[in-house]
Amino acid sequence: MLSKTGSFQFHIESYVCDFTEKATLPVIGNFLLDAASIHAQERGFGFEQISKDNVAWVLSRLSIEIREYPGHDQYLTVETWVENVSRFFTQRCFCFINQENKVIGYARTIWAAIDIHSRRPVDILTWRPDLADYIVPESEKQCLIEKMSKIPPVENVEPTMGYTVRYSDIDINKHTNSVKYIEHIINTFDLSFFKEKFIQKFEMVYLAEGMFGDKVKLYKQQTAENEFIIDTKRGDESLCRSRIIWK
Amino acid sequence: MLSKTGSFQFHIESYVCDFTEKATLPVIGNFLLDAASIHAQERGFGFEQISKDNVAWVLSRLSIEIREYPGHDQYLTVETWVENVSRFFTQRCFCFINQENKVIGYARTIWAAIDIHSRRPVDILTWRPDLADYIVPESEKQCLIEKMSKIPPVENVEPTMGYTVRYSDIDINKHTNSVKYIEHIINTFDLSFFKEKFIQKFEMVYLAEGMFGDKVKLYKQQTAENEFIIDTKRGDESLCRSRIIWK
Image (cartoon, rainbow over all chains, first blue to last red; front, side, top):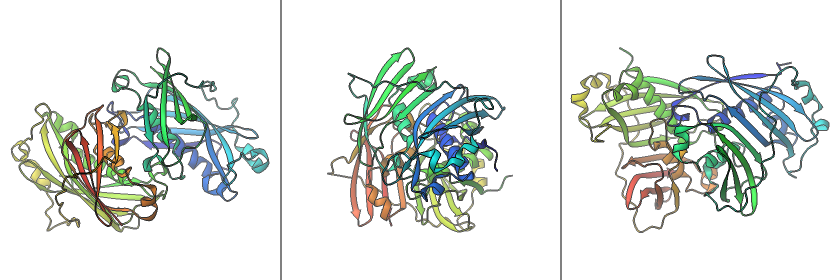
């Protein structure tokens, strides 16, 4: 049996950096998804393997905390492991390590398994009891990021920005990409934010699937000095809701 | 002296693929820019080195032809060399090679050197006569893509799409990214184009620099069965103009 924790290295190319010469949050989100995908594939429960059972993993919640963004031409190691498996959700953790071997952040994600046709959740414990073999309990490896808190809806606010879901929003899994939402969300901030601060914490709850051609609006509300909640809505329906904490 | 031609390998990660499980055109554009940047850096005329002279390379024209897009988890090799240096422009060529060692495409780019402060062109032959040492003449290595033709302006057409230049449009060089323009341009096409065809040829002329906050409109005109011209304009001024040929 393969080790329970997977470790994957990424190189920070110039084209994944912003004007501060650091990797962007969406890029770290892509690394995270890629690490999760390879880790699962190697252990027999990847995208292609479970599609034979007509099942797909769907990202339900995501929480990333980065204390120091990796810079251009550096290497970033992403460790990932399964922390918990319950009836309808699995919890996957991540640890980000820079090339000086320093832990620079953590992430926690919650995934549902859904039936591809009915789009209904699958009982994971019955469908794949073997997933439990890969659990690394908190007592063995700690993911030092708080459990995700509720993100309240944004109310009585005019939309800050709107966009239409287009080709570049659709990913290899043929639906709207969970990271592209983040790109649009952080695009609601002025360049001065990125000059003076960085996104220390980003939390996201995915509520509904966006489709090609959807007209989406972003509602932003400041909730504390460096804290914002942004609701991504199609009409009255939230597709996802996020909390951003700047430092 | 380093070899005149540089060769750089890229891995096609899942997050650079579209729903057809192939690398996208913007991604290949990023690989191309990255290869150019490392090639120049290694030979002493990279971004950081020439900024000491208050000079920057500015992409003026780009032409890419891809006969077969590399798929997920494959490797793509990008070869690049300088084909010509004249008073105000250098011409840099690219060859794309897949992991079966098959040439799958070519690209040709034209770069100006500008003074960072005055934004005026620098006489390259006087400033850096040593660049000529790296020229690989056409007789030695052929770039099998036609010389770029003129792209006429689009006239009497309503805008197809508009966007505001935001954080994700600004790159490590602190100005609007030449590849991000391509992402917006191809986003004007319906998903059915990407399902049934692929972009075989993409030509672009860069005419003015976009700035953060600019409100941009895209004007699209069909000029032949599988051919389109798209003008990216800020008010009446074209920022860039492109020709797309689908196959």
